[in-house]
Length: 115
Length: 114
Image 1 (tube, rainbow over the protein chains, first blue to last red):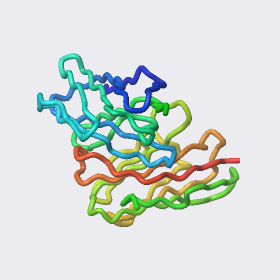
Image 2 (cartoon, rainbow over the protein chains, first blue to last red; image 1 turned 90 degrees about the vertical axis):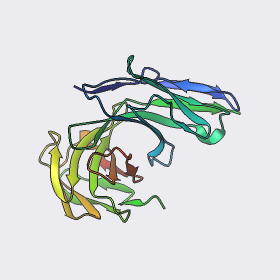
Image 3 (cartoon, chains in turn blue, yellow; image 1 turned 180 degrees about the horizontal axis):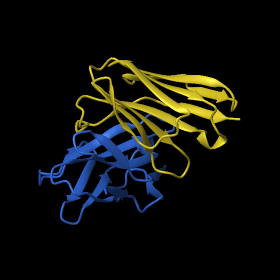
Image 4 (tube, each protein chain N blue to C red; image 1 turned 90 degrees about the horizontal axis):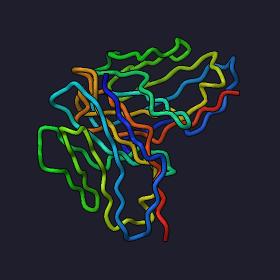
């Protein structure tokens, strides 16, 4: 069965510094995507970045990048130059279920940004 | 505007009430999803609709009844709920049925059952 584990319930970072959120997963699929979503207090889940498992190159979106280690089934999110607006819950997600793109998520990491 | 709109934003209902949650998207997506988000628990997938057909019912109690009349609208009909059903209910949509392009989520309905 597919699982997603986020081992850090809470993290804190100083504004302008860098923080890394960890995610490990398990899947029997050979071809899949991985996602990081952000949920600010407004409650809307916002897609931050996605990684295609067959691509060795780590995905990057502005200040957000991932460290994808397929063999280790690790998918961490690095936020550089942290901003106050980055404060939110962050969820790692993995699709499962054969032909249907059902996403399963980890329990989330609450990120606080200190001014 | 998120692209996926959920109404109402907040809902308080008694255990004997019947209410419905609404989700609407005009992104041209062909798959829609209901998730339940409870405190300190992972998001739980409840239902999946692909091309207006239900393709997943993730062991959800029958007091939750989904309806997808067309590819742009998704409802969750609620009746005789329990206090433990209080949660944030999130709707999402995706372009393909595999969801590999990622989901677009709504802002959720905060449901309180009293």
